[in-house]
Image (cartoon, rainbow, N blue to C red; front, side, top):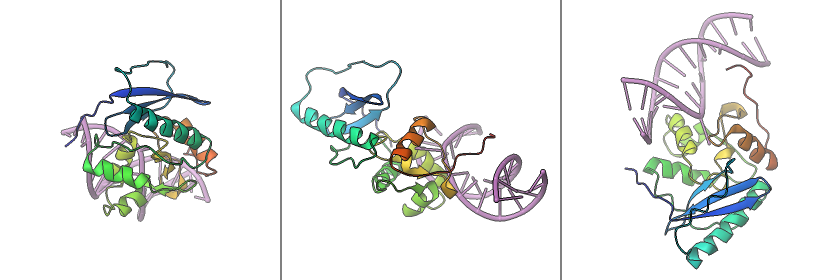
Length: 174
DNA sequence: AGTTCGGACCGTT
DNA sequence: AACGGTCCGAACT
């Protein structure tokens, strides 16, 4: 059961690391994307409700602080309804990993009482609609190895580094 | 010590 | 039916 929740309002977030883009539904923040080479698309449809503007202020501040390796502070309501039950469970668990700490995919799977679903956990992390704020970058492979990252490993290294976390680089071969 | 291989396992498309 | 942001042990170097 998956639903397609298209963001109704799309607003930019300019940071020192580039322009992020936040998408909102009527229920809250439902999408956050990393800066892309081609930026600027203001795909806003119609006037933006003040309630959404308020959410966006929270999102902007949270992203800026997260990029600086600081606590995000208050977050806007998150609309995770686009995900399956399993994905939403993983995403909620992501929110419990505090700043500067990490968990492995296997540990997350165990926490969800599905110890053998560690691979599926990886997939769910990759489908995280709100990266950075839901800290999927704090999920490493076993033994402290870096693991993967949908947004590009460069971002994972950058985010972890700014939080003071150390990791083990993957072996050069592949 | 480190590295490669191969199977096992789960949710998603 | 096939693929992953995996893991573990075994068999190598």
